[in-house]
Amino acid sequence: MEKSEKTCHSPSRRQMMIGTAGVLAAGTVLTQLGGLLNSAHAVGGSTEKWPWRYEKLDPAKTAEIAYEEWYRVFCGAAVINSIFSQLREKVGEPYTSFPSDSFVFLEGGMVGWGMTCGSNAGAAIVANTIIGPRIQPEIAGKKVTEGHEITEDIFQWYSEASMPIFVPKTPKVTTELVKTKAESPLCHVSVGKWMKASGFPIGSPERKDRCARVAASVAYHLVELLNDWKDGKYKPTATHKPVKEFGITAQMNCMECHGDNVPSAPMAKK
Amino acid sequence: MEKSEKTCHSPSRRQMMIGTAGVLAAGTVLTQLGGLLNSAHAVGGSTEKWPWRYEKLDPAKTAEIAYEEWYRVFCGAAVINSIFSQLREKVGEPYTSFPSDSFVFLEGGMVGWGMTCGSNAGAAIVANTIIGPRIQPEIAGKKVTEGHEITEDIFQWYSEASMPIFVPKTPKVTTELVKTKAESPLCHVSVGKWMKASGFPIGSPERKDRCARVAASVAYHLVELLNDWKDGKYKPTATHKPVKEFGITAQMNCMECHGDNVPSAPMAKK
Image 1 (tube, helix red, strand yellow):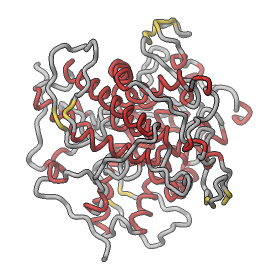
Image 2 (cartoon, rainbow over the protein chains, first blue to last red; image 1 turned 45 degrees about the vertical axis):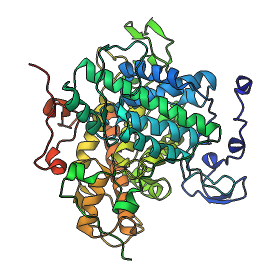
Image 3 (cartoon, rainbow over the protein chains, first blue to last red; image 1 turned 135 degrees about the horizontal axis):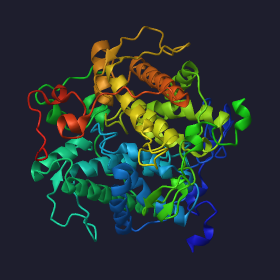
């Protein structure tokens, strides 16, 4: 049924109510929702109308694609492609114009610097490209925060999960892989703990397959969250509030890296 | 002169020689360069032909846009928009179809988790979207690595720079801001050191203006590198080789976070 609506906007109430901030000219303008939007610097492109039409996907099929794609484009682009390749087929534009393979650089926590795990960064890109940023115009007096929230959920879920979860139908490495909890969304923390527990070095087939399965696991869970969002059932679950808790943008486990020497942040005067 | 070529591909030799991997159907196919390309999983979209046409930009003008944009979309999207908004005007597509504002989530090291500084992540997105990923087909027998290399250069340059460098023409905070070296491309390390040196809390106008100026500083340097690349003068400068040096994806200053307790990575057998 939804196939026939290929060139239309999504039929959901949320999507019909979306504003047009993305294509507004500079200046303060009246949106179609009647709200004043100061968009002095808005330079929105043709695809900056959110949400992008989303069709529910099969998590397991998506995970299989992510697993295979890891061996072509590594973690970040694998997660993006696992979802956008299917939406290119089901929906077409604007997914067709999104340069997913540009995100190969997310590999190894961005060009091997061990920062944000590319699977997490890729998931964040998917969620925020489909749902849009939290700065977009309100819908029915409510801020659009689900892209931001799904990102937080993925980061926290990833940190707490025993990874890798997903086992592909025809794994390239057939021995059972040890599972570890990263307690962090960072690449080198996640990979390092797994390397320590497994004894496998970074260049081993086992470590590579572990990361391919992590990308698949993240893609799987991301689709679960996006499907819930599409159905209007999504509820944010992340509890980490960095600035409120620590006075600075941060993860939740300061002492794991800093030991007893956690720097204190200058706090606002009460 | 270049304006008249608006709808054409860039006239540079590099751009004329680019393959068409981005739009290849699945399967092993013969590219226009005569090379065999195994693209079993290639699901490329319409914009996955690199490099995207790039017109040289003015670094100072770009930095001013980034500074102003920070106050609308924060660090990551500010860096992206500072460059893509100008290229939308000078070149048009595919820049017009890139959903820059989706990248608001890069704020605070991705939704406030303090990981990769959004200015760095935004710069990486710009470089790799224009130049393309290192996995794209070789050109004249040479891998296309400049997007990857400019990313490494930005990360290392950022880590070693006294930030913020750029001072906008009409700053929103007029007092002089202290400069600090992050020694890391991570948000919370960069912001945290500046907060410690300045005494200003995370929510202060001074910290915000510092981050807006950091975004502007990164945009400025990124345009310098992209202009050099366009002129065929770009030479990679980054020296950090994580996996080779540490046996794992990582930054270069392990002890700064880990103290004396740096975990050792399982190494490959010699």
